Amino acid sequence: MLVNLVSLIIVIGVLVLLHEGGHFLAARAVKAPVAVFSIGFGKRLFGFRWKETDFRWSLIPLGGYVRVLGLGPDESDVVQEHGERTPLLPRWKRALILLAGPAANVVGAVVFVAAAFHLGVKVPAWQDQPPVVGWVDPTSPAAEAGIRPGDLVRAVDGKKLKTWRDWEMATLSSPERRLTVVVEREGQELALSLKPKRVSRYALGWAGVAPPIPAQVQRVLPGSPAEQAGLRPGDLIVEIDGEPVRHFFDLVRLVGERAGKETWLKVLREGQLVAVQATPRSEAGQGKLGIPIPALQVVRKLPAADAVREAVWECWRMTRDTLWVIGRMVTGKASLRQMSGPIDIARFSGEAARTGLVSLVWLLGVISLQLAIFNLLPIPVLDGGHLLVVGLESVRRRDFSYETKERITSVGFWLIVALIIFVLANDVLKNLPALVPGRPPSP
Image 1 (cartoon, rainbow, N blue to C red):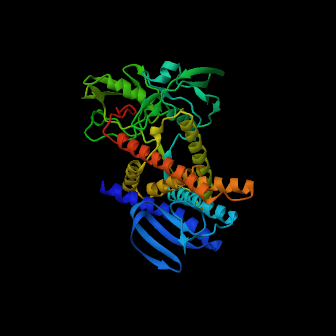
Image 2 (cartoon, one colour):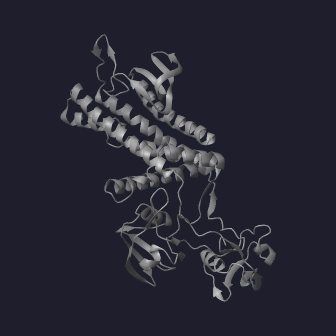
Image 3 (cartoon, rainbow, N blue to C red):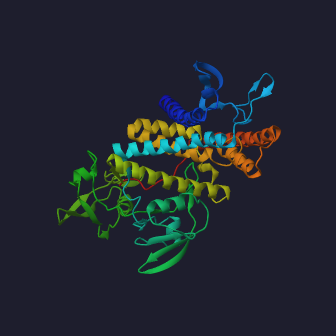
């Protein structure tokens, strides 16, 4: 818990400093006066004054703000001097200052992701491969829909798919929704009806398919039935008691049915078939050999220039996917439970910190990009809402009255309060102990 909390403060602190630093530098560049630069909200705890700016650390460290005089009437920059309101800055200056915060987060996202790629980041080995089905859970929605091993998924609800990443985005964001899935089978295209099952605390969609994973032994647990039978890393299991094994999850299923029974395995070892006898031990009624699921990740370590190019492309993909999911949430096609709040972010940050520096740097990049996208949404109080107002003022060639802007800001404020309450409640409910369905266990 302490690691999660400290990690959350570090992540939020870095990203807020980046975001508000963008606003601050843009304001200084156009010679706009900055009264306050605060990390956190609420009561001022400590800080220092440099020129006209009060740099402070405030009580609640979950955010921050820059008070730019003349930017507009919101909760962070209403300033009165001698009973008069500070004159508004020219619209182009306001737009530049407002854009600078999200822009700084985008640049930060590219830098963090590029740094992760340069250091060496673990990614799913199959994520950029074509979505050829390697295995279908016999009890899954995919099996019910008629999807078979060997099918190449071409499209979901009219959206063309190129990679496993595209397939996962389409199904994970569509729990309990009827999807039209087009697959290519033996040279023909078939349209199938799939309804992903709602699973996990995040209300994600589960179809029940997996990419091709050979039933190859990568590691044998010490003292396990596999070790006692003489199985070795590199062995490819092709048959169990005469039944063919084409996928690692076939191995899971067949071994699971043979708890405590003598079992013959046919293994391909160094080009030769070898017969091995083993007796799976029983764990909760399921047979286990002691062979962990093969690692499904590869390390991508790129030279600096290649890392930057890949980071730009990765950030574009994440932006495209995020906007697509937001669109599905707005139209009711995806669950709002997929949104994450401070509890989730703290847990993710703690897990990343425990995993290592690269995971934490990657997480900083991902959240920095999400922060930029969120802030550009056209909701009053957010940068995107203020930019929308500036855009409308530019079209009409005159500013709205101060009172009109205050009403717009008030509406936005209560919208954000409602969103915060929902996200926090959602966060608490999601993180209560729950049974989370997952992949089949290791054999």
